[in-house]
Length: 268
Ligand code: ADP
Image 1 (cartoon, rainbow, N blue to C red):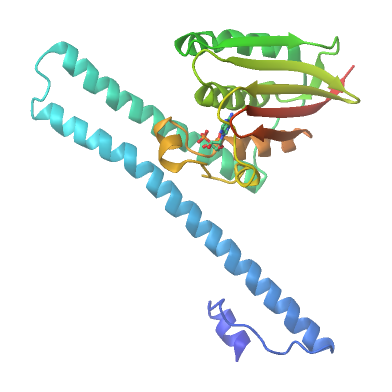
Image 2 (cartoon, rainbow, N blue to C red):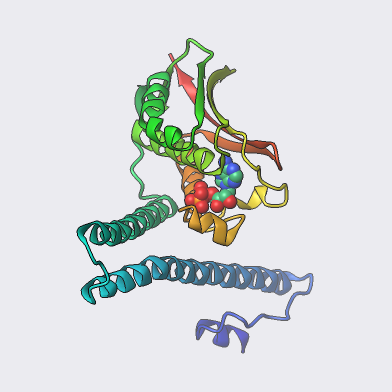
């Protein structure tokens, strides 16, 4: 009876043959499998509902602003530019979200192409420091970059490694109070090269810490969204580091700041 309902797509049905005999063992396996299917279905549903929700906000903003422009809301060129810039910012946000979703899909299906090339991690850090100079200036932040090892080479995908660094540095900048320091430190730990990215921001509460790696998770839903985040960055960063044979960890103290550490095996 149950297997008929199950094969017809009703995954809520369970068998009650769970005795200690062979059929009971089969019954338990069957129920565990059914639980796993229900969980996967729920995760998929949440994922699609989150994506629709995330796309809805910028889309409504673009629609409303465009309609207002057509109705002649802008009285001069300066105002017109202001509204067009708003449309551009929302389009950028949607485009980032679509790229992030594509990354997640590729990581989960194992179709992401991760290069295995030897690259100089210290040079990459220096380059990254240059690219964020304007962002730092805007918030009156100073970067303390220290290279405390003469080992420089790792095996991995330099572009993807830069993407992880960019995500962690953008978060540090986003959550750091104006006038504070951002730390970027390269050290060696046995067979690993370790990059630590630290900020003196508000930190993350210990109950939220294990959850920040989940897709679309934001500690403060409305505030984090208004700051521009989609809640996908850390989930992608974790997937990318694992795909490169590395790790990523976090330590944080509420009111003191946060430190992310990424590690990757070093090469001669
Ligand atoms: P987002 O794009 O929203 O920043 P992430 O996946 O990169 O998404 O981060 C998930 C959440 O973790 C953020 O929304 C934020 O609440 C929290 N978070 C990440 N980095 C920091 C940090 N350096 N300081 C405080 N909170 C952080």
